[in-house]
Length: 340
Image 1 (cartoon, rainbow, N blue to C red):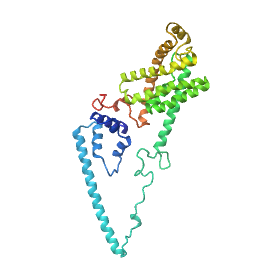
Image 2 (image 1 turned 45 degrees about the vertical axis):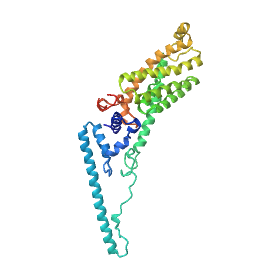
Image 3 (image 1 turned 180 degrees about the vertical axis):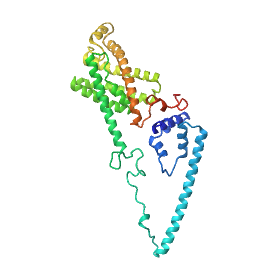
Image 4 (image 1 turned 90 degrees about the vertical axis):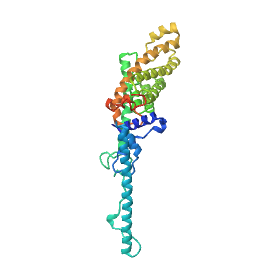
């Protein structure tokens, strides 16, 4: 089980006992520190929470808490005894020297901890490949950039497929959804805006404006996946909300830029037939929403599959939806306030 998953379970359990979401939140690095060898101060209460998160009962968690307290007391006693012994050595040395200044052998000098020796390093930034190798933070940044670039090209590939096959859906937001699921909503916004900016180079300048549609989907997918879509039915509902929001943004753009002659998702002939009976705006909305609903369902579920492949890399410290976790790593029914 990942440290991030343990932190999520602890936060969920705290909220179930009435703590606010902000107060219940715990950093992944804090959980990591508990497992780090050589710790001098251990939070016994946090250890007990981790034990419960790992599947033990309250009685076993209480036993672990007592062990931590006993170890802390024993360490304090040992430290005090060591200090007394060191004081006796200094007194004896000063007496032998006769000048009131301690004589310290070179072997007794303790060097300062160096960066990379594990004592004072950031627990989230271990070195990879030795002292001269890149840190995990550097590698993580590289993977994040690669994921975002790949997502942009995935969007552009979907647009190319749409154009080549003359499909009624764009398929230009799969990469946006993937990035929003894995990294967060604002990373998805960047992917969406860059996609439309590059698309404007090969199509027409006004394509940049439709980056607002991509950005809207990124924000809703990113926040919705972390706060709402914890089950498949909720995920389906989230995709429907994304389709509706994107339609509400796209319809005014299509109407103002193209006077209703292009829906962005359906053929001009279909729009012309509907506007005769319904009027331009209602025709644009009805056609766009139906096509957008199919488009966002495809994008959402394809992105969900891609995101589940990348989630184990723990690129984001944010809360992870159970839908993005392997089945064996998902919270059990009694571990979540939502009953998942």
